[in-house]
Image (cartoon, rainbow, N blue to C red; front, side, top):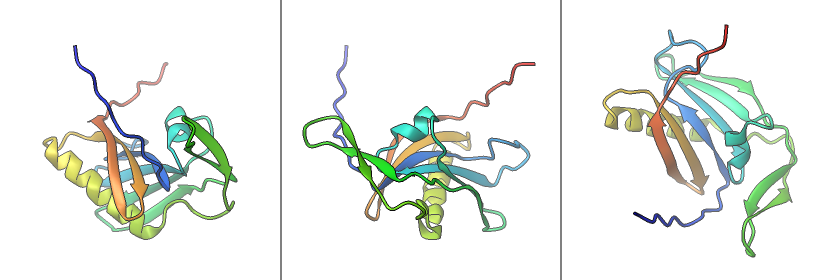
Length: 144
């Protein structure tokens, strides 16, 4: 038996990134990033539209797939759990500098795991990127 205790963090943004194009396996130089402001529970649940971008390490291009238009974010509550707080709507979650830093971290994680594509949960606090989880990327098989 084991017990794992992890400190909660109150991120400015959080999300998921995949070290390849999840829509087309023929694009191996892509990092797909999905993000929201605040705690990343909503990104993982997939219940609301997240900001989504793809970065190509080959062309150095950032392609915006969607912007998150939410006017609230989840933040840690001092009394425990999370609370919904108002935020400035219309402002992008990911700027170019953060996309480049996240893509660099994703590439390092993939190298660490001998080139196996990874599904990575992350959070940003100030200038820090915190890795919350990394696991091999498993492509979902669509029913016929």
